[in-house]
Amino acid sequence: MNILKLNPVFKDYLWGGTKLRDEYGFESDLTKLAEGWMLSCHKDGENTIQNGEFAGKTLTEIVKSNPDFLGENGKKFEYFPILIKLIDAKNDLSVQVHPDNEYAMRVEKEYGKTECWYVLDCDEGAELIYGFNREITSEEFKEKIADNTFLETVNKVKVKKGDLFFIEAGTLHAIGSGILLAEIQQNSNTTYRVYDYGRVGADGKPRELHVEKAVDVTNCVPPTRSTDPEGELIKYDNYSTQLLTECELFSVKKVTVTDFFDGVADEKSFVSVLVTDGNGTIDGMEIKKGDSLFIPANYGAFTIKGNIETIITRV
View 1 (cartoon, rainbow, N blue to C red):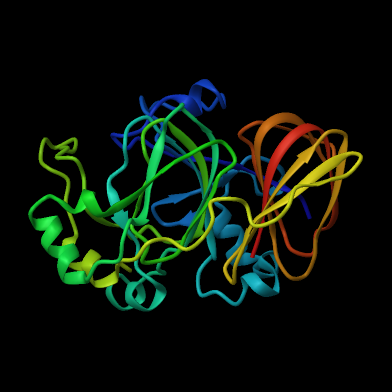
View 2: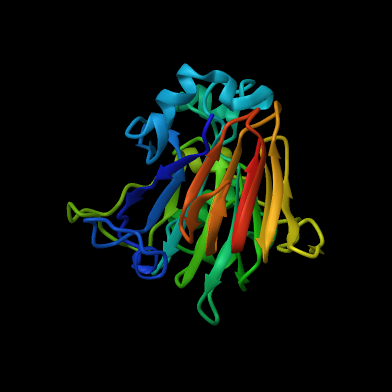
């Protein structure tokens, strides 16, 4: 059983920038690298495997033929449970919302989307939209979309490196320009666009809005969660850890290694390791900034060595 190094899938959405190429060294024929899908078994972008006996195959193929790789928690889900991205917003993303599982399965035939954002870097003064600045009714929300005044009611938050945003399904949100972040989300690509600054797509036409569905699923209230990681920073001799967030869908930790870190992939869950800075090795395999590793459940103990920052996710 090997640790699998994954090839990212890139998206060139119109709001994207070049940081994933310039700062992470990714190679792509696309001009803009808005998103890198770092752990994905979604039909809209499936990772292939770089190394070992499964090289060239998709991760989807491998977990389908080896369901024990998912672990006990992973096998409870009808589909591969999570999708992890790096997102470079050179310009503002559309204001949007995602449905919950019940609505999404009924209407879109896939999971809903709860997600979290961990801010890796940002320009000075960068901000994003996170919920509303006051509670409004769904009818008022619809009216303000129609008369183009609903931005008066959104909650704008200045961001800094290290912020953590938990975006529960039904939460209005938008990543602002100048923000680079990691997103850990349910395995879904269902997005309802509410507002898009009058932009047009590659076809020269205004991008589609999904107002009726957005009104159906949006919780028109201010956010209640802090933007701080959920756990305290814990320092050890050779590494430090910090719980970013934990819910019934995923558990996400930041692990910063200054010498070595010993982890375990047990029978409960596979482990995703996303390298966000530095370089080193994992069980002797060289890894660097931008690498994404899938460690099958039941792999057992693994060791990361070097000077390296990682985001480690389990389900």
